[in-house]
Length: 191
Image (cartoon, rainbow, N blue to C red; front, side, top):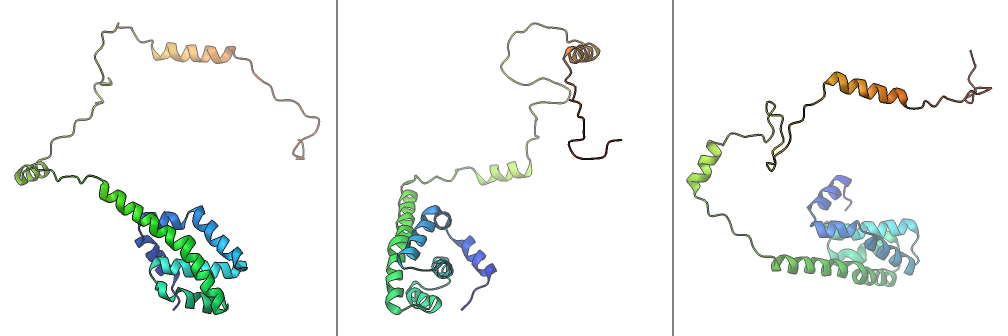
């Protein structure tokens, strides 16, 4: 049975993140390429083998049908299909199984979070009557909240003085003039 690309995408999205990451990793590609090289598979047959591996990992095909599927799809001898199936099982499927078991054991060792013991009425009142939001910086205040420190009051220079200083500074800077060319470097007609 052939599957559409949409069906494959949906099956990929349903996979656990660990499995998706492994399928997109360099280890997976390297192991699959090694399997193809060890069994003298050409690039087109390697792509078909990869597709069959994905179908099993997606859950769209049964793992028991893997060897007959690659035998038929790759048009290879039964012994070669068995040899490829064993190598894929050893290099890819067992690695995935180990990663999934590691993830399950790590997940079971994590402490379970307890649900907060708030009263139902308190939660409902917070939802129904939310506290007004107070922004830490108001438009009228123009100050940034922080630790209070005694500071000197320094008068701010006026905007005109700041702009005049800025312009004077720019006027003092040296100006780099563009070089004159005898002919146009872009071969455009000169006027």
